Image (cartoon, rainbow, N blue to C red; front, side):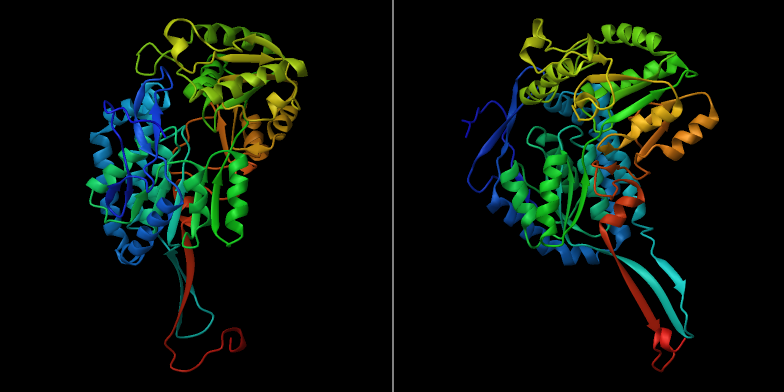
Length: 498
């Protein structure tokens, strides 16, 4: 356990409406990935903390479930307003703990604001169904019931947006929660919970426990947790799915991606290059929707590569708070090493390095976890760098000769989250929409930039079929209840008497 430095703050878990340390007093140091600066400490929680948080959520379940949904929505509206007021401070805090450039951090906070308002509005909707009965003097309708206690386990790359996606939808549906943020980026979730507290959310409805697997898996296994919402790696998601299945728990998994942009020979290349650079190197490639593969028609490949090399050379690395910075650090040294390990893989498989492929260590960059934006070419669809999620600023270029070949290459990965095509042919665009087997499809835009009012998620190894955001999120966090009201005054035996 680190010895606490009194010059930086020590934060606590939030359980039952109170801020409390971990049961055994352990803490985790939180550091700025751009320079290693110590930012503070958070609890390194364990099973005892998980049990206490789940009990708190369980105790609050009945009261919160019976709170009218419009009243629940009013609290979410207040949370949205508080996040708006605090947006700049929250964005700067996020840049320091996660590394993304400030303009992107502001967007991360804005997603939380948008989700607060969107889900607050659902408090006056939460539509069920009313259908005609097959028998006289009988009504038939369907209602949404909350699941109960939900464990939300969130990643480090969107440290406020993703916790907001999960908590806002679960709460408006009448569930109570335990939120466990990633150990690398706990401050953003702490600030989100502070906004809920300040907005008047009743004690126990939302609880926060910080830490790693020692608190995460006990939450998954806990008998009183009815559902688990997880965003993270495919490997961990599989483990969670197996654990939860033993108790028949509902689980939503949002896992990895190996997203591609297709550039056809008729594409607007100025627009395409803008979309590629933003999608591949925005957030330092650390988005599940980041473009990791560029599928480019052979007639424009040389020009696209030349333009990309020129644009990548202009990207400026640095601390995300510096206004001149285009690309920040990767999250930690372990991830930087993992990204770099793929350079040897690419070389062994016959890919050619155009630029990047190494740590950035000049000047102040030596203090942080910086990796140079990287372009690999002569990549074939079956290479590991074209199949495995690298989760960093690495783009693999694959040449194709037709739309059919491009779509086949796009679909041939273990993942199916986001895809994009640049073309000025409406017929090609419509074909791509029909045939690209990803959960998100963009036409003449990059692979990133999903909006909160549509369902977010993917196919194949990207998840298990559920969706986040939009109305799809409410489907996961609720159970259908079919209600039959017979006012005939005598027994009616459904199909037997119909």
